[in-house]
Length: 583
Image (cartoon, rainbow, N blue to C red; front, side):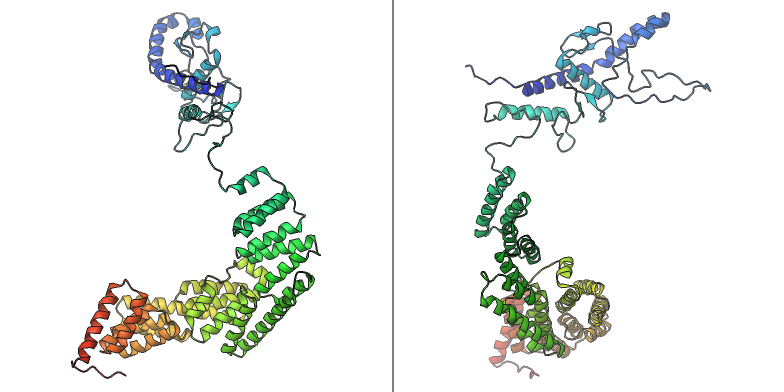
């Protein structure tokens, strides 16, 4: 049965001929040295009898095809000072061509027959392979059929691939792909030149990539960005607005729309910069003014927010200006209460400022977290700064936007929250950054010293505890608590020392203090429950284990301890031995 095939393209033929002559060359090269040796033996007597014939026998290799290394001096033999001439045995680039070898078209060629030497495309390929073998795998340049200079390992635009694959494997792979794939116009893909993407493979990014690659009209890109924004694809919208800006940066709407998408991604400081650019291009662009006012309000800059709201009388409402004025008043009251150490008022006013719109203001969040710390509500303070809705800005951009003093205050509050949560190394690093920003600030200096001292005391106490020196470890943790009163981690660690020393009452006290600051601190609750078991306080221990089983439902030790405590309590209620009185 006859099968119709499309005629192969020139590139496909190139690959077929290359593979054929490479295989032929690999077979012929095995006998090349044997032929050389035979001819050399046959020519040796004649060469000795006729020096002129010896000169004619060595046909020099074509120097235009391979870049030769310069002739190197040969060491003098037997003390002779004259330099010996390079020969076929000691010069790599000038080895004599054998009198007989298989040529690229299947015939024999000799040195006396220059007309038959390397003719045609296949013969040139054959010679190129021989040149490659002579330079022994180096990346010297050779002359190809087209006259372009190419590397042996990269024929045309074919890549060698991972692991140093040869040009032959790349070419054969290209021929295989040519036979398997067909272009829309009916010709086979050759694998040469530029890479052609398959028509049935979807482009990454869908419409976005197609829009960017075709460089659509900027207004069309803006509309596409608006559609992505409405669907909640904010990153895609930013990319489309960026492309529109690249094509026409004088349109303020592009900058303003991009700012809206950035704000939706939480990148408020970048959004402010884009809104400012829109206003710079068109100072009367009210929508950009209104958007900028809203951004400043969220970032806790009420004065700037009020200014831009007033510049957009058609976009802004009285409620917008009223909210900004309320935030300004709340922040001022909170700052005044902080100087008076009225932490309840600080907390109330800061929370009200967040409700009025300053939900991403680092200074407002820091005021709220500091107040919670002073009120011994460490878990809540940690949630304010580390929660999902907490603002996260880089040090550089925050310092540039909020100023050195404002950002240093945020950092020292964060350092104290980290210490309360037991992240001592983070606390030290954050406090050090704050000190570098504002070294003359006395409050920053105090927090830095406290963080370093508390971290050092905890590390020293841990080492002593591991060494079994429980009394010394207890004293070390106490020194840390002198620097950082109410620290739940230090209290829990000191409670462990008390328990090892048999002072279960003191251990319960430390655990209770730690839990008052951090109710979710499971380690402290477990330790207190264990100490209450030692004191035979079954009801108190039962309450702790019931909380723990909710927090750690898969913990087998907690399940077992809870069952034992329930059995002990049931036995006591059924007339067992009376328990010790609780204190």
